[in-house]
Picture: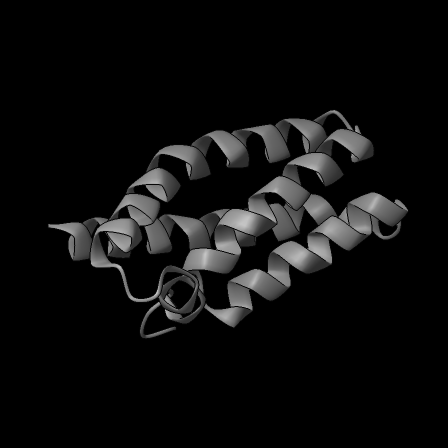
Amino acid sequence: MEKTRIDLTYLETFSGGDKTFIAEMMERFLIDAPIQLKEIKEGIDRAEWKAAYKSLHSFKSSVNFIAIQKIKDKVLSMEKMAKEENQVEKLPLEFEELSTEIDFLISELKINLV
């Protein structure tokens, strides 16, 4: 079990340590992540790999600001599978694992924003 799923290193560097900006980005992730996950799931469920790829590509940007490397790697791997339409049979399970990690990440972000 991971101790934390939050890694703000990139966001802190990107923002120059601006705490207000960091909080705004965390809040934006809380709003956007569930929507993006839904879009990814829909693409996978319908076997629309191009749509899944586009959603994963977009989600990758959000994750890069907030999440630990393990989550970033999962999104990147899934994005590659969808783009290349290679090993797509693994995507449903990969999505479930990603979704669980993002749920934990969202819970942690909510605690940190209080």
